[in-house]
Length: 88
Image 1 (cartoon, rainbow, N blue to C red):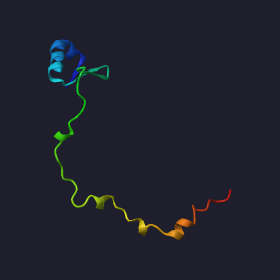
Image 2: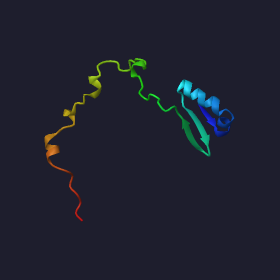
Image 3: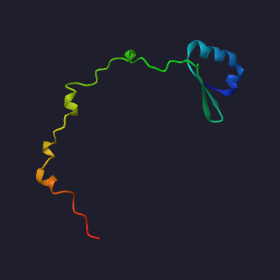
Image 4: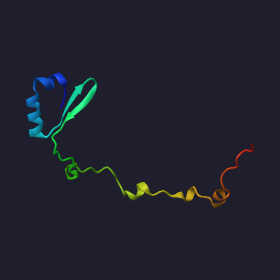
């Protein structure tokens, strides 16, 4: 929840009680800057098991990371060394 400093001043005790009860931080905007009111002992570890399961990969995931470099590799081309630099 984001509020202005004036709104905070009007209801400071109610807003602070809400932060304590819910644990949800409140953002206060003042002079173009944002400040956060956060309870001191907030758990910041997210439970990844609550994320929805998504099936995004169709097929074998190994097919996505396998790259066949044999078509790019030529021993003669690669043994010649770096390209010649022009003389100064």
